[in-house]
Image (tube, rainbow, N blue to C red; front, top):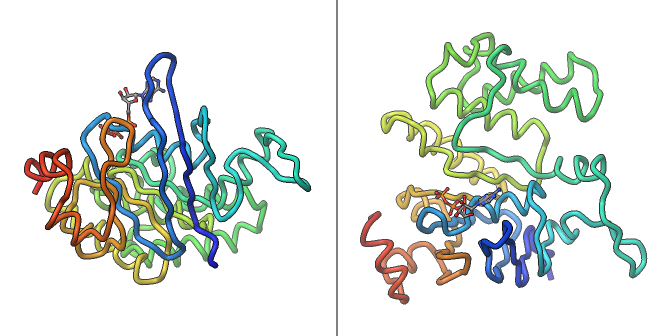
Length: 254
Ligand SMILES: Nc1ncnc2c1ncn2[C@@H]1O[C@H](COP(=O)(O)OP(=O)(O)OP(=O)(O)O)[C@@H](O)[C@H]1O
């Protein structure tokens, strides 16, 4: 049996008295494009942040590629990771946010080079060659020396994707990657994501782009108020939702 890339079992997360994730169970298979949709405030970003260990879960089990997030197993004992070890574990996961989070004082290529140099301590020339290749892959081979202010929102987001890929992650998390973009720039970013999917990257995508979910997604989960309401193949859930809450949501976004 293949190890799931992500496995959540009864995952709970609260912020103070606010109970946000209320027992999430799901599995993401390797090479799967897994779409996560739901109303604002339902806990989608929080769930992504738990996978990346930017937030710590309060109860349940959450693993990435068979390893419990935030823990190291030795024999049958579990040890909580130190901060330095968390950074190592996080290297397997690339994250792309709604806001591109590029360094404004660095060029596109410097932004992409930043991650691997810091983490792997490798020669600058190696990192530069890889960054050039990655920028080429996202269609920005001619913009390597541009600063973020000299790039469109869509181009900045593609730099952010290239930067996340520079870590050679096993898993990519996308948190509404096109929501902050002008409509005419959305397609280029989705095309890059489609390319990654074709190359076999495992991806969890929080999105309102139902067309992308339908065409590219292998699985779709509808989440509301911290629970998984409905899941299945995107074509099935989007064309024939079974739950009233899913129907109500889709009637607003489709
Ligand atoms: N660090 C935090 N401290 C307190 N509350 C938080 C924190 N992070 C998130 N929340 C709350 O958790 C709830 C879920 O937020 P989350 O961003 O996960 O939802 P979402 O489904 O991704 O929504 P959106 O589509 O608007 O991004 C919200 O009510 C939010 O205010």
